[in-house]
Every structure is written in C-alpha cells, then in structure tokens.
Amino acid sequence: MQELIQQLQEKAGLTAEQAVKSVDVIKEFVKGKLPPFIAGTVDSWFANMASQSDAKKEGFMDQAGDFLDDMKDKVEDWAEDAKDKATHLAKDAKDKLSDIFQDKKEGNK
Image 1 (cartoon, rainbow, N blue to C red):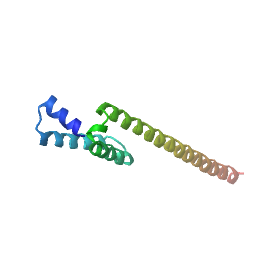
Image 2 (cartoon, rainbow, N blue to C red; image 1 turned 60 degrees about the vertical axis):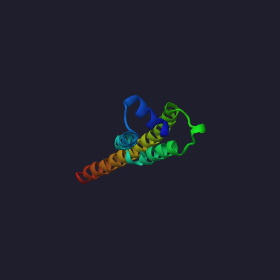
Image 3 (cartoon, helix red, strand yellow; image 1 turned 30 degrees about the vertical axis):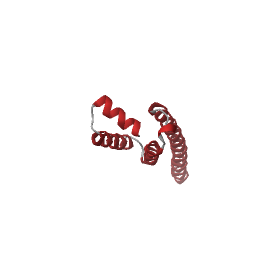
Image 4 (tube, one colour; image 1 turned 135 degrees about the horizontal axis):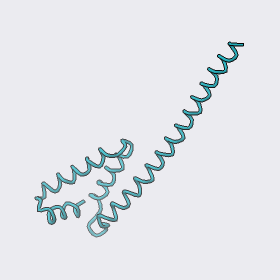
C-alpha cells in the first residue's frame, strides 16, 4: 500500500495524509460497488498490500490483477448459486401452479 501512497504523492501532488485518506476513500468506494459478501476480500487485499515488505512487494498492477481474478471467481460462484436457486424457485412455482390448475380441473368434473 505504501507504493500506492507514494504514487499518489508523486503523481497527484498529495501530502502523505491526503494520500492515505485517498486510499481509504478508494477502498470504501470499491466495497460500496460490490456485493456485501465480497467486502471482506477488498479489506483483505488492502491489508495484504499494507503488510507486504518492500522487498517482496509486487507491483500495484499485479496485485490489482490478482484481486480482480479473485473477485471474478467469487462473482462467478455467486452467479452459479443464484442461477441454481432461481431454477429451483421456478420449478417449485411451476409445480404449485400445476397443482392448483389440476385441482380446479378435477373440481369441475
């Protein structure tokens, strides 16, 4: 995270305090645009950036790519779960409607 803070200072002319606040704003913005179950991933990613030693730091773009890959996997899992639930709900609704119409059909005989 220090790398990002440093770039904000150099490229945007921010003070250290402004750069740190900017990173916090970015983090909260990203979390606000994602489903709640992914918010922990955002926190983990930023925490991981902050805890890496300078010698082992990956570039910001590499870290962002890893983060986005993780997000993609989670969203795909979420979408698959949502699809399964929607399919199940549609089947249940169809079965109930069929039962209702079958009962009415049999009642009219």
